[in-house]
Length: 348
Image 1 (cartoon, rainbow, N blue to C red):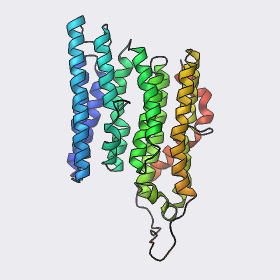
Image 2 (image 1 turned 90 degrees about the horizontal axis):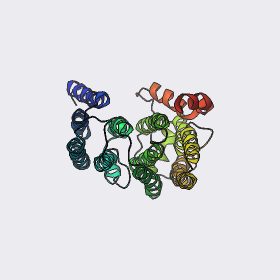
Image 3 (image 1 turned 90 degrees about the vertical axis):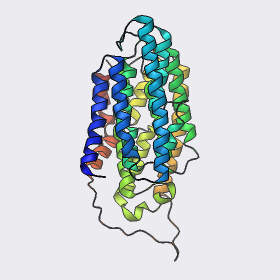
Image 4 (image 1 turned 30 degrees about the horizontal axis):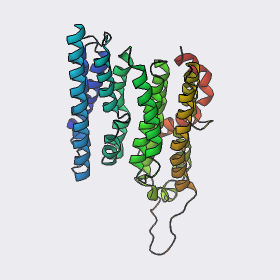
């Protein structure tokens, strides 16, 4: 892609998100979301592969549906209350509709079905943008829509954690596994959204760091399915030893960074007398942990068939910059000792 066009599209992504961040009026927030969607669509379809075009079309239809719902709900709210302000949501009907529209935008279950299919059709770089940056603007609006429907948020959250764990069990494609992982993590964030917005923000931040590490690792090792993971030791032995730690951090195992948000969320849910919900969420994390362990096993404990017809890749020096991966993977693995300071900052 022409670097000037690429710069314009990336500027559009940043502008759309910034407009949504800065807006207190529903029309401005909707406009920011639309600019965001229109800017990423050429990035998704740039390879001109039929699979990428199909993924782009599915993404456009899902986002257009969510945007239409959001616009309808905000107009309904203005009609019922006379207010366009995001913070003045007094009627339960538009509040519920807006929550569902934003859930469709970020891919919360049961409105998640577009997410794995779209991510599977994209390259890893665009998939990374879709899994991280594109969640910021809808999350900003979800944090501002108060008082939201508490029961709806809890149902969306627990459904997402279960579907995200259950859906990834029988997948062999890494991008689909990452999509279900994203759905599960979003479920954890939504569970605690109404009780501790700062804790939701912390979970989102940790999720971004972990997802960035994993996407960049797979991009450097050029892996798109489980079978290619078994050959990664021949290409990048050091990376092969780091990726299982990143995967286990995503699964929430101590003493890795991913354990921190899950620990604080379970603690907060227990404080709110939602012990059964916390138990179901913790059990759903085991489902996710299973397929992370499966990927770790494929990378570290299996070897490719060593016969005359099998071809192993050459261990050539990588020309890609690895400094961002080094910083992000260090943060993914080593931040748990900072838990007391983090809890003091984010759980006020």
